Length: 111
Length: 114
Image (cartoon, rainbow over all chains, first blue to last red; front, side, top):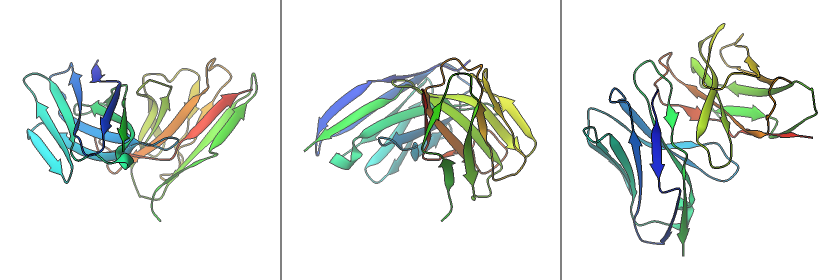
């Protein structure tokens, strides 16, 4: 089955800096890649997603890039703020199959 | 407000006891899901349902059971056969019957064993 690996497991950045989280996937048929943000004690919230027919997608300070050849995709957060501190999960799936999640990255943005 | 509600927020289980976690959505979504989350782990799929009166096992269904009698409700029962039930349980839903669609999560239920 699909295997999604996520790095790093923890990331600490200073406020205003950029943060990058990377995920790799194993199944070349995967074509949907969402990113979720989970705050402490809450359910994950979708922040951005990308499908395999595009290479990049942006939403204000958040962007996701996809490299289908290398089978990896990344989350980029620019101008980080303390409220960006949370656990971020990537996931991948192919048509007809459930999402496979990475193990998460705990992001800490220090003032 | 539209959304997904899970209750209770905390649940305690005694040895040999079955417990049921509630999940309700008023988003008119067709599909619903149950995940288990352990510390330092990603979300693992327990069961999912793409339509009323039908559900499928996920990766870790052993020791769990579900029902889908109504579109808006998808309760999860953690049975006594689940030997390590302590975890954070998340319910999610998605609009269509295609399993790949964007999923929206509830606030979760934390289950603890006494």
